[in-house]
Length: 115
Image 1 (cartoon, rainbow, N blue to C red):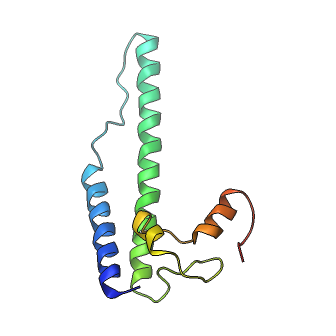
Image 2: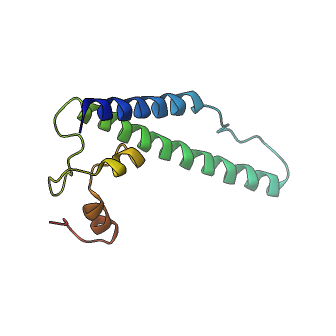
């Protein structure tokens, strides 16, 4: 991977992280008192959805931060399972990818390493 490609991916990751940080706190987590059980249930459902979205965003932010740390070492772009290079197309599509396509497919299907 060239330095230009790394710089492009690093900029993409930093921009994505900045957007996520800017969007944090936009949704309400509170539930207001209401005498109507249906309104209350609706508020609880919306609150649970918001919590799930926040948890998902936090997990994605951790993946991005980990990818940025790996970029500073020599193991960025190298599959954590088989040690092969992760394809540039995959890294551009999913910059925080830790596995090559083959190992990711194996993991998604419940199999072990692809090697």
